[in-house]
Image: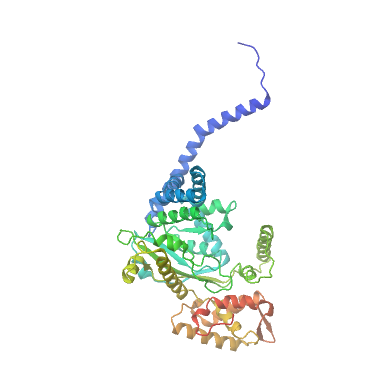
Amino acid sequence: MTDTVNLPTWLVILGCAFIFWALLDHLLLPSVRWYFRRRVNIVIQEVNKKLDLQLPAFKLTKRKVIVDRLTYDPQVLEAVTQYCNENDVPKDVAMEKVGRYAKEIVPSFNAYVYFRIGRWLSKSIARLLYRVRIGFADEEALEKVDSQSSVVFIMNHRSNMDYILLAYLVINRVALSFAMGEWARFWPVQQLSCALGAFCVRRGSKNPLYRRVLERYVQMSTEAGVVQAVYPEGKLTMDGRLCPPRIGLLDYMLRSFDPSKERDLVFIPVGVNYDRVLEDRTLLLGLDPKAEIKSTPGTIKTTLSFILHNFWLMMRGKWHRFGYAIVNFGTPISMRDYLENHKVDFRNIEKEERIEKVQELAQELMDEVSEVIPVAPVPLISYVFAENPEKGFSDLEIKARVQSLIDELEKQGAPVYIPRSDRDYTIEVGLRMLTLRHIVLENDQLYYAAPDDMDVLQYYANSISHFFKSTLQK
């Protein structure tokens, strides 16, 4: 009984590790989990008292539960059977794929992260980079939206800042969920985005099994009342103009919408515009077929270089914010009223007709979005130079032309944002932003469009060109 037993060092270390893990798992981790669950529950109770649309139970359900519901959804299982028959694939293999798709799509929403960290991040980033303003909001109509409705913000897509900006402006009223492209599937962006409620989408995927899993998730979340933000364009605009709408997510929502149920489906048009889009030159490169496509390391290098350059300007006291970022909220559109007025039910029509009707609706929604896109100072000045790219303008000529454009826009009810309600100041800040970036050059008291940056001026002018009868040359 008193003999010495010799054990290998590696076995002793392994045994100690198991003991430590057992203590951690049975004593420490439960306490830590309880602490964080308690903090999350306190946050949920606090924010639900303030939000116009309370957090639905679906959004607070454990991720594993939703993944299981999605994996074994009757419509998904039906798609699995069809997939196996068409591709001669064992059911176990197909179900493994479905489980992988479900885990990829379903977010891991964390109320504490969203309303504490997310609020601070979105506010800090938005206000650091821009002078953020709400130019217009149809408050009367917005207040009439039933709190039980499934609300979807329909937004134009100009920058990757769009979601941060929208989340910052509505975080005291709703908690947003949004579709995240494959570009964001890297650590830690994917983990943080999923905790903030984003669901991953493989854009352009033709896999019918994946599309059915994605469709059912979108339908489940919509039917449960999750507030969503959707970009019908499906991608960032490369030339500044609105892109034709894609109907994928809209079709998923509409083909299962039952107007007789208690929960209505309401689309809210949102227009956003900037004095400076962070990715403007990168997006314009996408229009040049001869442009070299940067690798991921090259993209990271360019991004870091941009950040370091601006940080160096801050340190020297020469940095300026990137002008105004303006958001407008239009009049909500009830799908219950829309279906009644148009005598249509997307659940009960053939696929070809449904696609056509959804396309018509998508275009109507985009038209509503286009009508609330803000006319910001830089796009306004850019339009003047884009009209006459070879001409040199004096101060008075710029002011006269801008004043004429503002009169024309206001006459047709376009949402022109006039900082400080001062037109001269609007012209001043717009022109200053362009000259600081050397997109507009000054010589002998005349201002000229920089020849090498004419495409940048065109990009900003295009964002408001739809308000004018005469369109700019492409």
